[in-house]
Image (tube, rainbow, N blue to C red; front, side):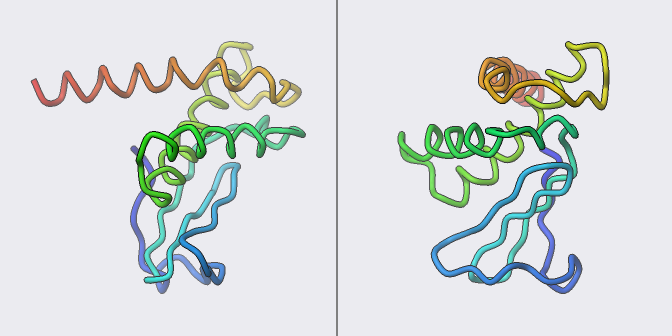
Length: 126
């Protein structure tokens, strides 16, 4: 995962957080928590700026949180999966920095990203 942990001093100001975390989408999403820890995601595609993309991100967070992941884990992984889905969709469209795709096209990419990450993990631990 290319989300990296960083202290609040290294990454500039982190939004004030009250109940767990805050996250954004796009090329440089940041997730922090009350303890001052931050995870920075520098992946994604300009196409993630499309209307409804944040709703897809919220759905991925909920989908990870529902079976028992913590709120922080859900948000960090969802930002990563969302970014990878955007990059994958852009590549599939034949334009690495594509804009103009629809938010409804993103959810179909998420299972493929998850499968690829699981396969990489199995290969790395085997």
